[in-house]
Image 1: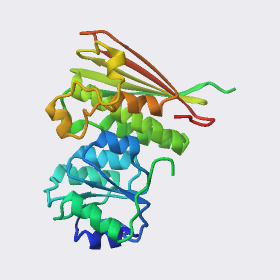
Image 2 (image 1 turned 180 degrees about the vertical axis):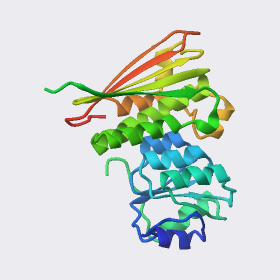
Image 3 (image 1 turned 180 degrees about the horizontal axis):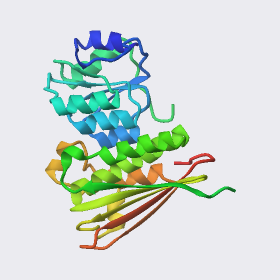
Image 4 (image 1 turned 135 degrees about the vertical axis):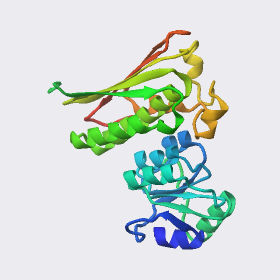
Length: 117
Length: 148
């Protein structure tokens, strides 16, 4: 699945648009706990999170994630947008809950990855 | 084997400056890339630094991160002035945390910091005593397989 397809499935709006929405997603990681993303997230994934802070963006940059999607229509402050631009991390906002967003992405064919695979 | 030191950098870390948390680690990542350090090593160092930096931001008054790039390894020091860790073994237990609600609101403080750092690093030394801050030294080798 491409980022463009995920954005469509999630009815997401671009806050910081991707330069190339055609980039393929290797998977998705849904978490509010950045320590978990740092420990278990995989490069090339999409991050679904309720955390609309600098730390979510920096975590995505350090783990080479494709983009951050903020759930529940949460506002992304301008200083967070600035960090995202500096770090080259696209940011989107979806009105959906994390549960629904995960469910829709999986139904649309974005498969989960498992430990050891 | 070539073990020369190629570069030394230091980055200050301010305690309780939540909005700056992660900035030193982001700088570390850029410096390592510019120095031509292998991408896999850059990633492991960045993740370990980010967790260690957040520990300083969340628990200490101030601190700094030192980065030494050698031909064969990267050595990171994260040294703070803060309350210190009373029981290091306990702090290394996944899930154990003394973090505040503010820490949790930033997506940290779930008790995975030190275990995550240990997993990324090849060698980890931690020294602390109550009231005396924490001195964390990490070594990550640039060649060979990482077994974490």
